[in-house]
Structure formats: C-alpha cells, structure tokens
Length: 144
Image (cartoon, rainbow, N blue to C red; front, side):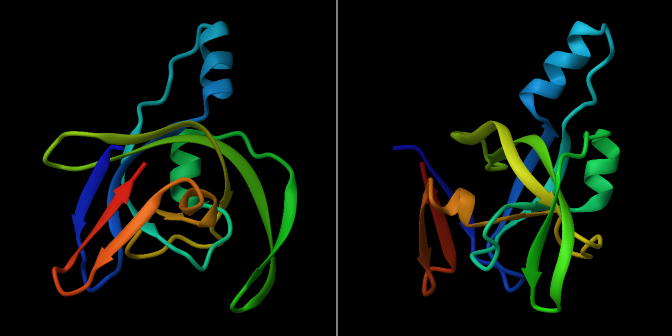
C-alpha cells in the first residue's frame, strides 16, 4: 500500500496538490481542439468536518471549470447554496515518491477564498484512504 508522510503543522493536516479539470471536461476540450488549462499547484488540507471535498472559487475560475447542479449544504453559519464541479487532483510529496491521484472527482465550491488553503479534502476522500496521525512525532501519513 503506497504511503505519503507529511509534517503535522499548527495550521492542520496540509498537503501539496496539483488540481486540474476532470477527465470528461479535458476530453471535451481535446475533441474541440482547444488547449487544456495547466494543472495548478495548490495547498490542500484534510478536513474531516466536510462531507465532500470543497474547492476555492479562484481555483475553479482559473481552471474555467464547468458548474454543475446547485445543492444546499450545511455549514457552521447555516445553509448555503453550492454547485458541483468535476476536477482532477494529485496529492504528492515534495520529496518525490508515491502520489495519490483521482482523475474525476466531484467537489463543491467554497463560498469564499480561504486565506490559507485552496482545497479542503472531505470525508469523500477520507473513506478511500487510511490517515495515521503521529502527534508526538509531529507527522501524519496517508495510505492508499
């Protein structure tokens, strides 16, 4: 089972990632002879309080991601309307080695651009990986 290990930071369980359009959108652009937007380097965070992965609005805009259906979601401030999008992402370690890749992942948009992260990985991803937190060792690992 591949493993990625990261430092446990005061800001949380932060992981570097590359984010791009979902596979279907990329295939559509290729079929039309249009260029693909390059994947973007972002700062992700594991967030067990989110049921579905959520992405900063600036990132969806930069990718020119096609919005899907509208849904209601519950936040700490109450109900909000969000849209679904399809993206791809690759979580990697700066030192190289294994990567965790998903080519077509359904996400919602965050309402605002957070100051410190670009993507919050929710329980949808947590259900597919094993997260091991070593508090005394100040690290955490993702097994997939």
